[in-house]
Amino acid sequence: MFRHIRWKLLATYLVVILLALSFLGVHLTRDSEARYVAQVEAGLLAQARLIAAHVGQAVAAGDAARTRAELQWTQYPGNPSVVVVHRFEQVLALHTTDPNMRIGRHLGREGIPMALLGRESSGSGRADGVPVVYAAVPIQVGTVVHGAVIIRARMASSARLRSVISWMLPS
Image 1: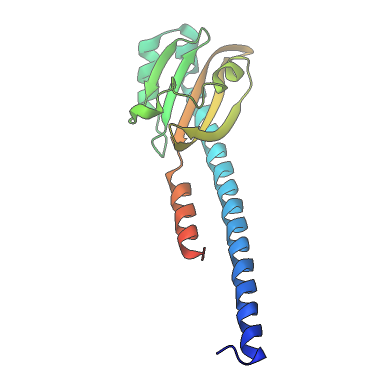
Image 2: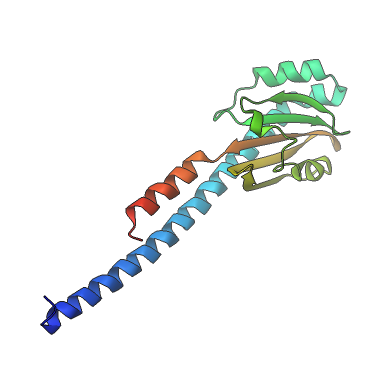
């Protein structure tokens, strides 16, 4: 099969093209994953701002029961974990369906001090081996910060996207 130079050139060409396609696939995967994470962070920040505006008066009063009731009536897509914290870092309300997503776990804890200082923050990382995105927003009434809203969500679809693309590309 490899007696003629044409076949050797064709085989070399195919190897080079497959390597280039592999590198392109990896680059496109990472780029699309970064865009996806940025979109999820922006969405979580918007949800956190909405919740902060909705529960602001209850948090300012320090009423945990009213804060939980207000949070219960707030609608938000994607079923993220939501924690409402008073300025003394007392948890006033917590909504989560996943026990691994509690705020006491690693990721998102750094967003609380930033939000209590009046600054929004968002980020991504891994919590217990699971890719997670978080957003923290201060609850302000006027210029006084009364608490913070922290939202965390899993990024399962990003892991699925990466596994599908890695399965399609030759190794």
